[in-house]
Length: 468
Ligand SMILES: [Zn+2]
Image (cartoon, rainbow, N blue to C red; front, side, top):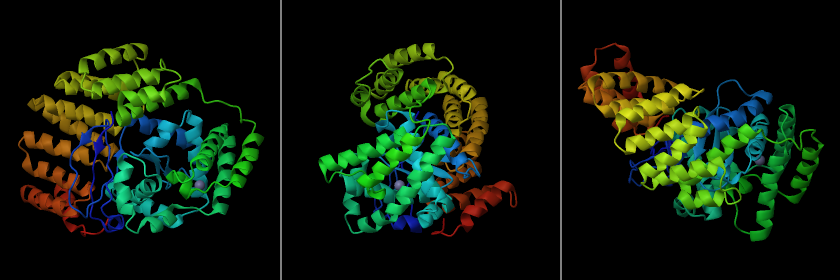
């Protein structure tokens, strides 16, 4: 499941990227309509999805590790944008859904991540990476990322969400933002060299990286002005491609292919992204060469569900579950469909199964489980849902939706101080500090002074309005 969620913020950093419209996706590509119409607010399209995050983490982990940068667990920030872009800050990897959709093999994405890691290890763009790494809330990250998204919009003039940013970026910040993200030619060559080294030491081919960069390079010569943001920030002169070609071919792993299992996960991911971003037509287009691919059938099931045909979607999904009974994400989609059919109890069971099957214990799946339990409305389930949602927040601290569900569950149980405290956290992580403080102040009145929850409320009250 993928959820769209808009976060808005008035943080000072975000003010730099004022009024760009970007959307935040969370959970199961579900859209939550909380967009603020305030002119000064900013939101960025971030996709949250357990399946995609797990896959991209698996792509990145060996690379980050071999580069000596794996001090802590990496998190993946998926940006809902059709264009090709990727960026690494050390703690997080930002990658556009468009890049994941365009790449036909895992190796193409792994190559780009290796190149980005090369920039990171080389200390390139240190200031921006440092800002991103220090950003404590997703709202701030969203703002920083918004600059990139606007560069994308301005550069490519493509449709979709990027376009909303395009007009704004034309206002004068465009050049500044472009220079913020663009690398020097020497840095590009250095990042390529590092990337090839990382790929070789993890036993992987650099062919995918070459494929991606060659595609950019060719597209540029064919269409002239139409440019992807990645190409603008990572210049690709012919000389660089030639260099990379020599380096890539020198590796003993040049002809090594991704494992069939990894390719299948990649196909499933592409099917899902195609369904959520472009519906059935996009699924067909993505798999035109291989319409019976499991990714095509998965995408078709999801597109059918999104189209409102829950019953038909369910039978398509059941066929997939029969093929892969241990796939947690099939169970997760099943839960989504059941929720749509107002079968909260059955949905809770599907999410519970998904969570039990999920090797990563994603906070997102647990959050859906807790939410479905809450929606059953029985007092026992409400209490249990609170524990589960809290556990999911423990794994995914910066998720505004987790706190929103928690507020709802406490509210249904009549525990208003804790409901207010959860709302305060939700507003805080959405970047709405002033609203967060109003809720926190109200929560404190009902909480015992000095208790951990009272202190939690106090922390929000003491936050300076424009600090991160
Ligand atoms: Zn680069």
